Length: 269
Image 1 (tube, rainbow, N blue to C red):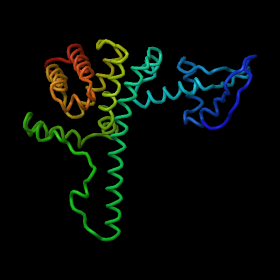
Image 2 (cartoon, helix red, strand yellow):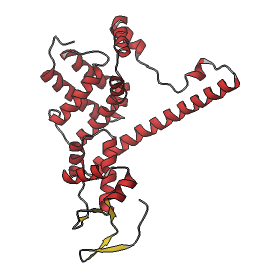
Image 3 (tube, helix red, strand yellow):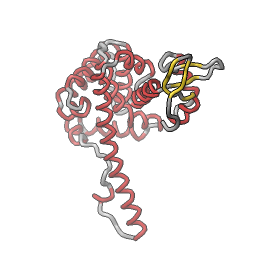
């Protein structure tokens, strides 16, 4: 954070320079109201509060706020963020942040390619030149599982899924776009905390997973359990979900099994 250097006297002791809540809000992009809320729930306690009620933050609080923002960017709720910070070890924090970094790097490469494709399209349109199909669609994500899905579940099932997608609301589309990635990131964090798969926090996340899945098709009790097992059995899903850590995928499967046994019926589907 830009600004002050040196040290100052705080309540009779020599302290690191402190920043007001307004300064922290301006530099971090977090509103003062949010910072006050974090204080109220005990998530981010200011270094000191002046007699007039103004809050001041030192280096320690700035670093903690950085951690909060990183964890929030992973899609974690404030309750989960608080637990992670309370129980965190260097190893678990590095593990979670490492996975998030890998995802950000993949997104960076994908978006860079899309930018190049759009730039090339603009240039060709301006110059009146035609583009080959491979140039038009370079960088766009394709579904590598469609042919396999048609073979495994049949054309009717796959076509029904596409019909559902055509009827999505904007909210549905946003959930489909971000929901699975959030589940994959947050399930690793919950496992790193040592949460039992029956824990309500874990099961709330599985509820989100089921809602995302149901945007495409609605699995019943057995189908949802089978989906979890497929994640474990298929190397592609193990890599996508666990990033090389099969125990995360197994943890997700076990949590899905508990959800199926407690929330779903045999006839639902």
